[in-house]
Image (cartoon, rainbow, N blue to C red; front, top):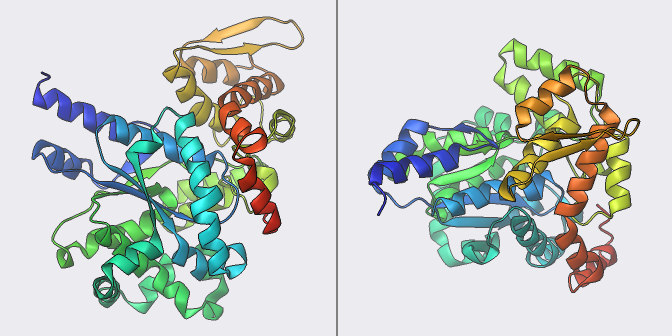
Length: 384
């Protein structure tokens, strides 16, 4: 039997493992693990169309880490939140239909693709949780809302909502109090999401006295969209250097992979031709690894996959046919910065690995029983 202290370190290391970028806080996590408190995770999703590498593989990679650590994992299908943000045309029945159909299945296949087990994860539809909790959930929303000012509520909503100014709907102001209430309604202590969820998670910590325990938010990296260029790169670097957290978060959201920019997103059931085409035209500045979308996909999607199956990263030089083999990601980045790897060669290698990695999901959705979900999405006029 392993020593409890070494087991605690193993759990903490798995929670900290990339793509994790922040834990609020690591000390509290260590305390919970040391005290033997049951850790319960959740990640919430708006239902908004096809699942891409960031929504699917990167997020599910972290869920797989939680599973490996022996932590209970929960995926929350946020139908009411999606309705508030007018996703899928603002039609609640369509949102629910997609949530329990295509979207749930796409996340299950994403989790399989990164070595996780969908059978060990609970999928929870928001409206079903609220029906179960009844008036208790309303009480939670009110408790959270009473601890927030109107100004705080406005600052905490999405960039789009903040830009709308006075035209923001009242329902959008309820979004974050509901999101915080979800955490306590689900009785989870490891809320998980991208760093764009930080504002809501900080509020969850601040109101924790109302609920008797402090959650430990875990924030993962947001995968870069292939659409970014020099202008977005410059703005992002300036925002980072400024130390302005809000500006930095806004710029991160602007450059992340998003289905609202389908040309920037690689979907988990894209054909090999689509994957190659999207990566061929992706922004990939030579000798630059910072804010390079192709490097980002290689580092956060492909490299963990190769590590799991115990294979090196191979790049073939199209001109010389020379094959370079990398057993260490940092070595690959150093070679790229020095100019020893051409951007096109990197793009080709990343494309081939993604095609291989996504093959099971692609077969299920394009040629297998999952085709009915894609057809249903098209019937609903959802194209991305």
